[in-house]
Image (cartoon, rainbow, N blue to C red):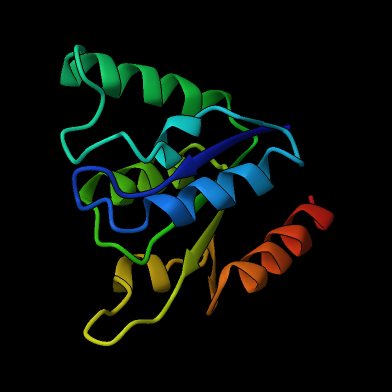
Length: 138
């Protein structure tokens, strides 16, 4: 199983440690193309030494090869929204994990899309349970 994990980079790295833990859990289900999303050393600048075009083309290649897309959507990110939209257009199975926080609301474009499974969760343990259920149904 090839997995594409999406999480905020340029939209903010406050959840990088959480991403790292989710990615480690996802690796138990298959190959995660985007392990770098959980790298604590990755800054809001993103991948150093490569162009935006390179990042776009590489990530779209990974997205097209992926069997499923798992996105953590608590942090607002244009890039993650773009990846989700492209995944839906490609007919991919998409699971979005959203952790409600004061002052944050999930985008209606994600929450209202019938082709996206959106799960609200409160902590890593609950996210892992949701992910396990998602893969049981694949």
